[in-house]
Amino acid sequence: MTFIEAERKFIDGLSTIYGAEEARSLTWLSISFVCKLDRAKYLSIRQEEINPDDTEHLFKIHEQLIQSIPLQYILGETEFYDLTFKVNPSVLIPRPETEELVDWALITSRIINGETEILKLLDIGTGSGCIPIAIKKYIPLADITAIDISETALNTARQNADLNQVVINFIHDDIFNPSNLDLINTKYDLILSNPPYVTESEKERMLDNVLNHEPHNALFVSDNDPLVFYRAIADFALAHLKINGFLFLELNEKFGQKTLNLLKEKGFKAIELRQDMGGKDRMIKAVLS
Image (tube, rainbow, N blue to C red; front, side):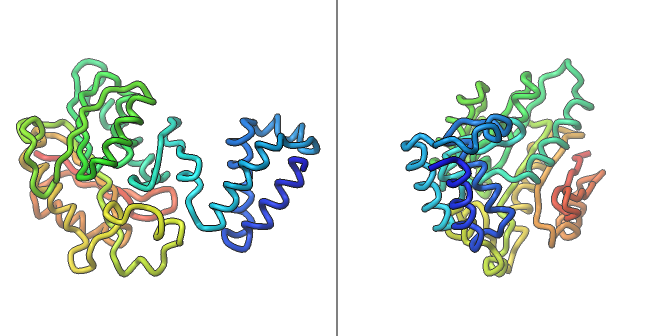
């Protein structure tokens, strides 16, 4: 089978599930991963025969994609902020909007820090570790702690720190009842979080590849109290941020104004609600003063 024959068969099998454009993207990502090809090389060899082992590998991926298993879980890795991260069903797949949150935090860190002081940062609900690892990669002097309630998620985060050659202090703890002495005895310059924010009622509009495979404890909150994590994080930040320290949060577009009001009521200042590239209220920054 030639590359172009495999490509057409791959796309035809996926188009009815994912749509033509997404099917083409998944096909290219699968071929580039299995056959270790860049786009220019691939275009020059599309008429050539594929190695039989690669063909078998490709169509095993195809079978899993038809079952709506996310490609990132199938491949076991994804890209985030120009870095490679291991992913599996114990952690959320990092999203582009979280890259925007990291970018905002990095810009702010450089403004307040320059190149002199060592900043202390905390990431709450770290999952794959993508937020603290990306920040540490670009601000090597930062002293970063990351917590998660899931030990299996922390194991993945530790692997990602090793993969990207950074040192992060990972702690198994619960933001609703934090007990680690290092965590609660430290004052931080920045606290960041991408907590669960999808309401239970929004499940019916989610795609199967998210709903059936990504960890629900990292995704969903009750419709009765959709800001439960934001309240807990804000209370923790009130006690553990330095004066003039920053709080960065990713959020549900439906609750941007409510999150802003919550932080205002808690006493935070200079609160800024920001939209993502899709024009949705997706992240917020606040200052403890």
